[in-house]
Amino acid sequence: MARIAVIGAGMGALAAAARLAVAGHRVAVYERTETYGGAVRRFERDGFAFDTGPGLLPLPAVYRDLFVKTGKEPLEECVDLVQVDPSARHLFADGSGAALPNASRAGVVSALDEALGAGAGRRWGDFLVRARETWDRTRRPLLEEPLWPDWQVLAEREPYPAVPHKRLLRTRRAGTLAEVGAWELRDPRLIALLESHALAYGLDPRAVPANAAVLPYMEHAFGTWYVRGGLRELARAVYERCLARRVEFHFGAEVAAILEKDGRAAGLELADGTAVEADLVVSGVAPGVLDRLVRGTAVRAEGEVPPLRGAPSRLTVLLALRGGRPEGTAHRTVVHAEDRDAELDALFGPAPGMAARPTVTVLRPGDPALVPDAAHETAVLVATVPAGGGPAGETARRADDLITVAERALPELRKRLLWHEVVTPADVEEATGAEGGAVPAPALAAAGGRMLHASNGTALSGLFTVGGWSHPGGGLPHAGMSGALVAGLIVEGPDFQGSQ
Image (cartoon, rainbow, N blue to C red; front, side, top):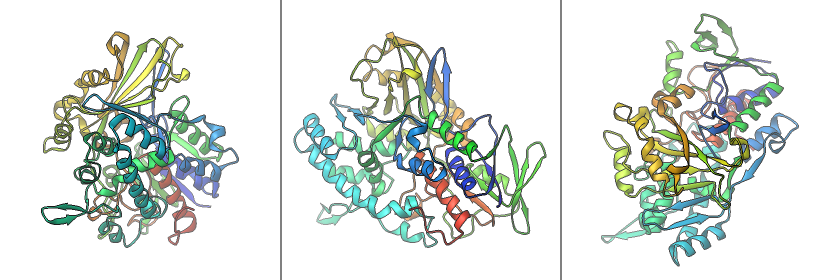
């Protein structure tokens, strides 16, 4: 039995802790804040409650597997997990809209044909077929296996089977997600639908590789899910599973350094000077934080995938509303920017900032557990913004812009508004420790490896990394899988080939 110290109590770290404890190790988690969950937090006021991090769960099989492997109670006995239907309602710049059924390719094709005109559904359906092939090619190496030592193979090959495109007497295949949209979907509304999946993860569709097609595919294939009471309930359930497996938690325990002995990780030094001995250390913090904790030893060896540094953040506006949620209201509505090119230029340009009217996701869960009574409703508005908040912290002043955009989805919003709260990138940084409140995206293949995340093992023997800033990257499913990978590497050793 090894003594294992885990730095941070984010979702990936919790998943690793539970799995390692079940394997017989003595696990202790050290979290600098006073609670667990990382970005999966809750805000409460006047009988209203809100998720301030992720509001929906894709690919719930990752957490089902975690609960099966760590105890007798399956996930559904610990949380009330429900499919969201429709998966999303999309409002486009031209005033048209479409509500897409959950986990139904045929239903989505039919809905798009009806909403956008004959042929739109077929083009999107054909795209999903190619996206499925991409998923089949990348699922194991990018989600279920440790990062390959010969990761260059993943970096060089574009797994998306793009349709040949003739232009100026030359035949080309899409290399970016934007080219997939322009050449294969052609309709600006379908392009907006496609690119919104990348934008939600802080990715520029003009720069990300074509295999980012797996992002919309995951949603369409495996459905979109909600946990009654909010996604914070999922964090609670994972935390309680850790407690049941006798994981020790130390909150308000900031780690100042990772101790080394004989060339390997040997424990932690806390900010108050306390030394914690350990045989192994699992770090669930951002790369910049980890660099400061490791003294005198490079975390990553030359030739390995370097950690991704820097990513956009999110601006979240929490709305307390008079009046109940109307019957038939979509849980999620994506209000697309009126000028998508201007939005992308502003967000990913040389001086990153917010567009005047950005793409805004409106979440209206209609969950009785989140409101004081049936005569009130909650809504959460989310937009991708620069890390740090842009020039002079402009995001704190842009909440009103998000409310204006959301009025397209929520008529008479301002008349119903009791109050609102803003969650800025600075708040995200406080919760997660990531500089500027940056939010990591899932790993993607091709693009020379620049979209891969660093491996879960490190150059310092006995030190492992978990969570969104290491393989396989950001997002709730990916964080959960990183915990499985780290546990596998520790329990089975370097020959571990991945989750089954």
